[in-house]
Length: 353
Ligand SMILES: NC(=O)c1ccc[n+]([C@@H]2O[C@H](COP(=O)([O-])OP(=O)(O)OC[C@H]3O[C@@H](n4cnc5c(N)ncnc54)[C@H](OP(=O)(O)O)[C@@H]3O)[C@@H](O)[C@H]2O)c1
Image (cartoon, rainbow, N blue to C red):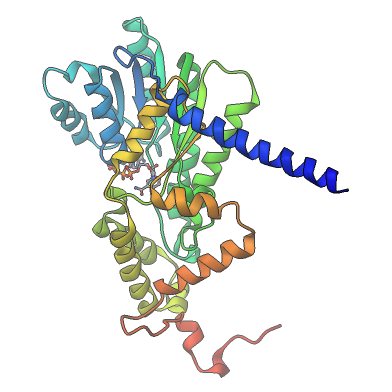
């Protein structure tokens, strides 16, 4: 019995040591060799701001040609101006609205024409465009839910299906997921669900059949980009609240809404990272590294908290989230702010069946 236990112990130790050494070998040697960047064509969506803008500019400066999908008309020229006249020919800016089928069709058509006209192949597609939503799910109207899923999930999947066949042998399909896809952050239910669906879609693509390209997911934690700008965030939450049914707003009450909105926006300002370039570093690694990773957890919160939490038993994850959640519903004096319907006198509360 003792010999058997010793054998098992040695086997486990060897396995752990081998896994750790192969991890180090991969990180230190394999992941540091790169393909040449010059002359490669990359499609990036959501290039108006944030990670998409930064990725497009860094790609062009590194010698690649970028076909940039921009939601707003003004971004078409702004991006070209940002790279400067000497590099402007290396960036092709196209309108893309993932809520509009015709816009998606035109985007794919124009990518095809560009590649055919210049006799080029596509090296990478970066699926980056996305929307954010925070707050209790009841606040989200049908239109709000549909828009979020149309952009983050349905539109992104459809575009992937159309652009992926254009990828060359050894090409890269990179999608900006989120840690919200793997941990069920409270008050992020819809955003998390939209990213979880996209995450699963790309993970399945990675393994389901033999394809000439590889698939990579970027899993950022919180980063200060226009998506999490406090004013935009407040406007985003308020739009959801204003469109919620009157009965829902009465149940929650304006004090609950105000407390959540202020605490949430302050929390993001406090905790979100000032280094969005870490995300772009990983996008570029996924595009050009000779041995890219399947998943890139990005940011201290993503690496040291959420990726670990995602493996914890559900009760631990729930306890953690409940604890954090409480902070969003505390008045500046530290008093708990409840939904208005639970603050009514007991007699008016609905009776249990
Ligand atoms: N920032 C974070 O902490 C964080 C964390 C995890 C994941 N992410 C993900 O990272 C990606 C980029 O976000 P970001 O932080 O860089 O924010 P961002 O600056 O708001 O970028 C989102 C991009 O998507 C575009 N977009 C919005 N609606 C669109 C539509 N209907 N069709 C096509 N494009 C549309 C936006 O255009 P406009 O600027 O004109 O609206 C913008 O260019 C998103 O998928 C987001 O979910 C971000």
